[in-house]
Length: 113
Image 1 (cartoon, rainbow, N blue to C red):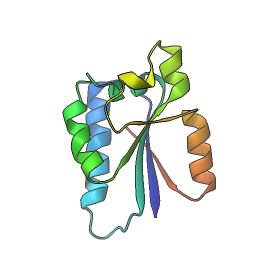
Image 2: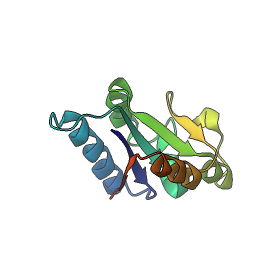
Image 3: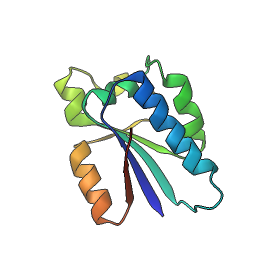
Image 4: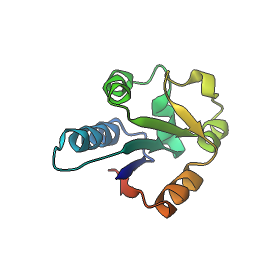
């Protein structure tokens, strides 16, 4: 099963909650996952920047094979470039477009928090 976690809030508590949810899924031996994605749009995309206060919590996700994706529209609208993102973060043209495509492909969708 493929799963996409969607975060649109830049609140640090919300982000910690989202990362905890991803980690809980990865640790749950009763659920078999093929691909897990953490997608951020809106202000949340800024928490994928290299100097993000949650940066240290992203490395274990990368190591576990989680795709971390930031919305290009959100970055552009806030004056940031892809080269300012943490290593390993992918950029998708549109967060909403990516979510629609992933759901149409049958991925499980979880909005967090």
